[in-house]
Length: 279
Length: 279
Image (cartoon, rainbow over all chains, first blue to last red; front, side, top):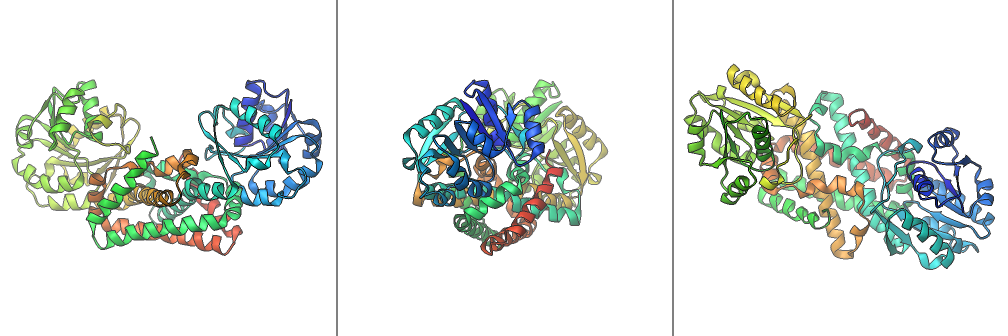
């Protein structure tokens, strides 16, 4: 089976590593608008060959989309026009708009929408690592709209990535990721901006940056080309969470301003319930 | 040399591990208002003996304070009344108020104010780990007010913890920690509250929580008994940073609401400058 990876970055490159390691793919074909990325991916041995998307569709049985979600939205309908019996796996971080855009396409069934809940703050082929997926969750979205054989093929590949499956509809997916992924990134961006601003005025403050700071701010290293389209496509949900988050912060602000430390203690204690979730 | 650790939790217990490992202390004496903690610390082999603070002051040459900052503020003046030539190392996370409280004490020189810029989200003696300090920064505060021999003794111990030293005054310390430590915790508390609130209404959302979420929210597991007094003592600086952080988040909100994604892209790119700091 030939497999095309469209977008040989962190996610695409890391999948390619496993596909080759586990010998799932006869050949791994890389597709990327950046010639430099393709060359790098070849050098790193992530892919066997680079091709245009049109050629890759003809040459492969499975096409995995790991480009930013604006690119998926743009290329997916045209890609489906060329598909006969291939399986297209959409690994984008947002789902509602993308799946709406192909809802009435006669080849809709060939698409399996799946979102691997993993990543790092790095991007590009050199960010690809083995075991990025092991033990993590793969969210399958609206699989009732996928052909059974297309889903089976996808599941076979995902099993090899050693992931746990969960299932939901596109709306649920986009709401939930706004809460457990998108807001974390926005908070990190804002924290980085807050602190960088202060440093400009005062200097030296990073000498004291410890592991707590690093952990809350590391996502601010994330790529703007990846994250702008995610927020664009998930705007309404992101705005809702962000408003709620600002409200919580403002409440904490008020409580500290009013020196109501009993209330502050209670808020921390309540937030400690996150221990139930994070082991 | 006998060394007393006042507060055998994460920081105190981890210091005790090194003091014993490197044979710096003849005996490590534990002081803790919690009998259970003392017992646990003895069982874990962190300390050789438990004592009251009064007895420990008589029995030891060095007294290390690793209790929450409200407890330090309360006990330090009285402790100094009993000190003859001992060294008292204050390891609290805030400095201005504590050092003000002893500014005119005749034994002020016996106190060395130092803040180890490290930690985890866990607390108590069972949270103590070896190497918590290795490679991290020890912030020495207002050392010009410490006796030279007291500082030398402290430095000798800190060297064994394998830490890098930096020096600043109490005001700088409290401003900088507000930016690179206290705000990270408050953001995590608020994020946890935001998401827990939503889960109550909708359930299931944590299935998708990946490593990004974990990293921004893990500090919300931190102890309210430790963090309430920190914020109380550093109120003005914390309010300033928090206000700036809310402003940045509100700006991001406005930009997304107005669908000005070019501006959003620029903000992420600007926040990426944090790469300069976080390796």
